[in-house]
Length: 465
Image (cartoon, helix red, strand yellow):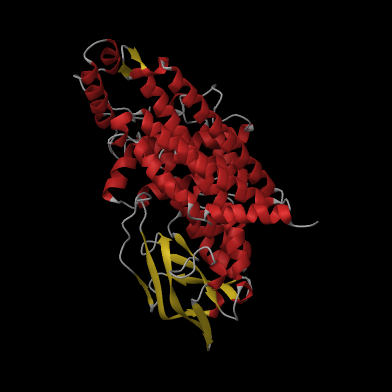
């Protein structure tokens, strides 16, 4: 039904390769198979393509209905039923949502992951297809076009999508965080103006907090917004902004009052506003499917009606947004780690040294078991934090910080260990494990460094109650 699998080259039948030929020949053949078996962009059959391009926001029931049209055989996860089954513990609705995301990851993201990374492509078409499934405003309310799902649902979606392309999923995560901040704190006029377009990803959003001189100490930011008539006049610069230059709206934290956190407000700045400009595109180790650069404001006039929430509420809005952002980036790490284990497992069954396949070496068996344990522990702590955030648990900030800290570090280790299992082949860009490793490394830095996560957890523990 879905034409997502190219025929293997005639001179490279994988089953024959595993049974005969020299060891060098086997690895060369497997290398050719990995490279040649990637489907081209746009390999959906017409009926499935129409499904992904539906111009509407999908609520739970709609996702459930749509998923019945997606064959079970197209689920990407070969570890179903194993101890790290990605669907374990989910209810029926979440399983259906996950199935849609996994199928999209397999058919639209995974085949293009390497190409997008190498060419530094911002895959607008794929992003909008994801949005057509309800992934553009996942936890925004349905009133203005959001999907109306929970934070746990969002975690499940991000993990599933990241099995296909971690970098592209990360941008979807940032976009969703911005959409939620507008939906949660904006007035009805702002919600009506932006949420419908953000939900379809017809318009895309970027989060602007970090500055060249204000990273972890975000409350020391200096970008200013001063009133002039009915406008704010913004001056300053933001650094490392994902989607900068491509996004259509920028959620900007700037200083409207005195020093410290209470002097910060949140203002929307639209692309094309006079005084808004962008620096050179940064050359990054990973996350290459969306640009990052300096965003500069030089006497940038925006209407005071673009204020989100109240004056002085910006830092609180930014931190509340990051709670969900931390869960999403941790969930993206889960997806990359799960895919890496999947590929490492397959490699151990094919690669032969000292007269036997690698799966028969006890050290590698033990290491694979440790990786699986790291992954499952990470998934459990992330989903626990998501439930806490859904339930407005008083400890949700610390739990989200714990989840981000633990999952991003452990999942990066998993990706790195998977690369090691591939040996020299793992270091080639023809194999996806190196890209999962590169893309997950930054997760330990952004949305609050893991050092700050440790600070937030310890602060919670040391607070007298």
